[in-house]
Length: 89
Image 1 (spheres, rainbow, N blue to C red):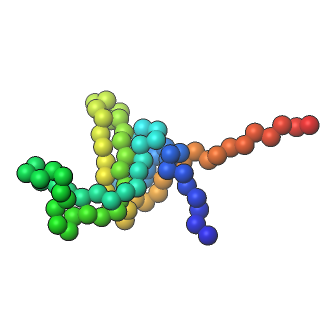
Image 2 (cartoon, helix red, strand yellow):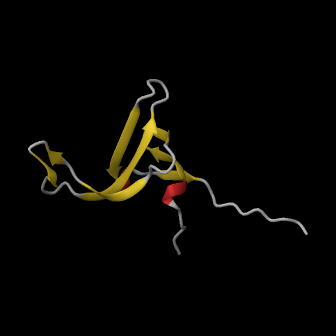
Image 3 (cartoon, rainbow, N blue to C red):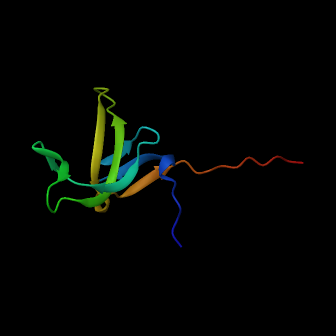
């Protein structure tokens, strides 16, 4: 059985260069491909693959950065578990 991870609850992503703390709700898994400026609506032949995408804010420059890559480069994700409050009776 697979471990269910809600992609909307992912808070950080581990890549080869370390942990990346992402903007809430920005983690996605989808097909992506490289395009040419001459035909931005069409992916270049052989470049379409399933991968991840996320957005983060650089801690030094404060610029918004978007990362995308193949699933094979994703080492781990950190996510907020769904918590349930239980009241004592």
